[in-house]
Image (cartoon, rainbow, N blue to C red; front, side, top):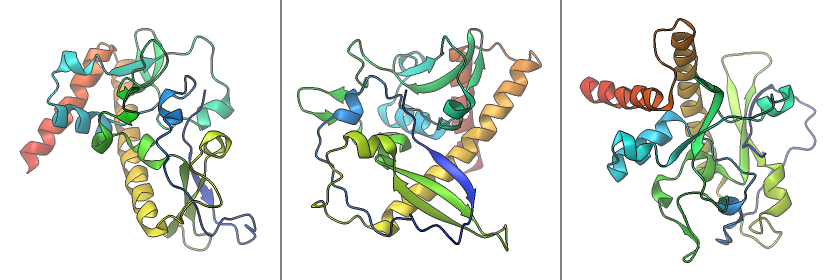
Amino acid sequence: MFFFILEIVENSKNNKSEIKEFRFECTRCGKCCTDKTTLVNVTYHDILRIKENLNLTLDELLEVIGFYIFEEQLSEEDRKKMVTSPISTEHGPAFVGLLKNAEGSCYFYDKEKKRCKIYKLRPMFCRTFPFSFRLILNQEDKTKAKIKMRYTEKGKKYCPGITKDAPLVDLSEWIKVGKQTLEELNDNYVLMEKWNEAVEKKAIEPNAKNFLRTVLNLSKKETKKK
């Protein structure tokens, strides 16, 4: 199974393989939306954007958000490739993502029109493909860092939008997307840790509905702050 990759690595002065420019243009082929082996991980920010803009109830949200549990334990290498940390559930560790239909395509993919039904609300996972981002720490000053991007291995393998004839991407705009993604993933990591800690202390019943209810409560707290 494929997962979008984010890394935090030490700055290397000898990084000769670093790509200076990127070429890409989406062809709307739908491959990334219909690939059975691709799990679109979502953060709680993604969930809130979808819920609030589509005006979904908790039960309706349960019909589009999936909780994926692997029958076999993931290797350390595979776990490092995950966008988000798993949450504890009554059935074991689960990764939160968009549901798929019976054919293995994303729930929100319109096969006839070949487009995303929630394009403006699509998760950061989708916004960043076929790129991944790394936070490069400065070796001399750990408080300083740069965001670097690269093509994902899956993107290079099957995305027809990556060609030598494709237009150059606006690197500054993509870095902004990467920065937002990293920040939201950090927020999400904190929530996952608190959730798993609460489950371990038996302070909450570890089911999907309670997790989504917890996410929705975050939205209410933010509203009160405003």
